[in-house]
Image (cartoon, rainbow, N blue to C red; front, side, top):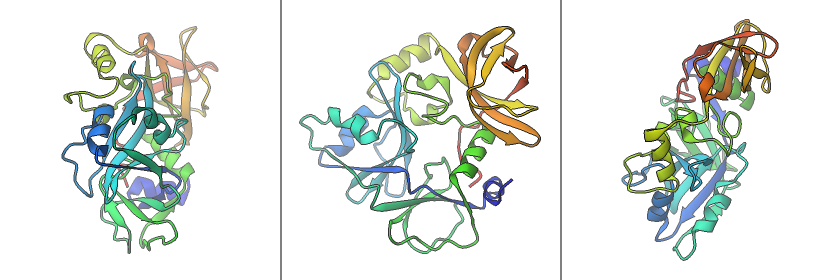
Length: 286
């Protein structure tokens, strides 16, 4: 176990998210335009706040999962770089005649995720961080703030911590053919909004049906790997999408067919798997 992973578990870690995409949306129509497209309710969001959101296709498939926070010049969109489609590219076709511009400012801004009680020297903060809780801290990319009393956690530490907590990651456990209903993403969807892209498809599945797949949080008594088959008896019903060693065994997430969501599961090699609770707030121990 690394020092960074231990610090994450204890809520004493600082995570550098400077590689995340940061897209600035500005213009007279920016706030209303974004609110009409995104699943989150952006109205009433104040400086220092943030909200998780999704961009969906017209058929309700996930195209991007990101955080929105106000900026002096407009709104900033913060996106995990593992996602295949940059959010600015996905949004650009919808600009049309709106007074809106999108600019990738990733190289200008650094970004940290910190516990709420941290006292960094410099930067400007917002809550919650893109990891779900704690606070995010922007800083000019060439002037990193001083942070004392915290242990740096690297991307590998953060990934292991995420998998231990059973938190699905878009681009890993969910793909661009996924529906939001496959994972606990309600925090990113304002179901009572007047409109957003893909809203009718979301409402139809939520009220009248179910997704074809679902993401499960799993424990195993032995090591398992991403890509391993998931079996219900002699029938393959899905794949492990994420895995990490954990306390003599493994923690994992797997995407399985809806019809197998309650079945007894094992890997193709015969390792029995036990379901655990998915905790929908990544980084909550920050």
